Length: 252
Image 1 (cartoon, rainbow, N blue to C red):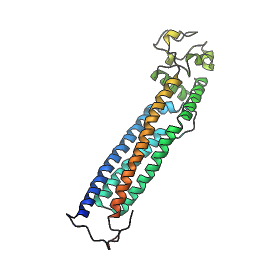
Image 2 (image 1 turned 180 degrees about the vertical axis):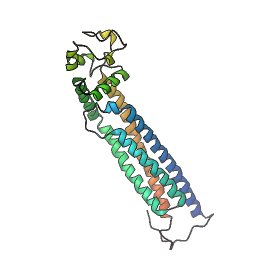
Image 3 (image 1 turned 135 degrees about the horizontal axis):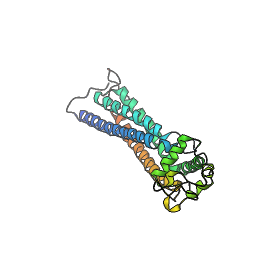
Image 4 (image 1 turned 135 degrees about the vertical axis):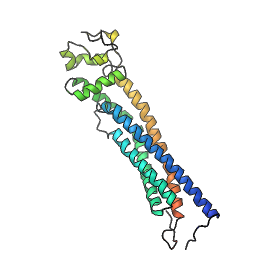
């Protein structure tokens, strides 16, 4: 039978240190979840239209961030509560959740690093489709216009990509207003190259997405590695708490 911990003993001091460490970790974990939630909301609002241009059938990244961030926030509170109350069952559940987050973080991080080129190819294909169907799909047309304005670009590789599209042929070889540097002097036939953005969107957007995806993937791997600390703390603390009133303790 495990004897109850007395105040002032080394065992009680170790238990207090574990409790405080796990509560501090849970706060950091909660803050990470809040950050993921904010990034997910930002991506949903500002990148939702851009993601609609991709031809790749990948999961919706903003939705994943929102769901994961919400779950991490809830479980971050659970971690603090389980540590403060020294509830053995909740600690073991919290450790199991951290293990799941560890696996998910490693998967997401490695996928982001390994499939960056596939994402880029999917976006390039989707961008070409958006040009060829411009004027037919209003949602994609709006997303494409917003993209060209935001990145000061025109077409896929250059503004010339527009000249052979069905929309441009109907407009006598013109380009959309979103390709223009100003509001006038651009939509001519042929277009005035000095009044429009001559660089294509694919190079600019792929460089932007690739660099940010690398950062996000690295952060996901770092967050996954951080979970090891939480798992160890939760298991150590759970192992020191009696399993039931008789005081029989089992390892985590």
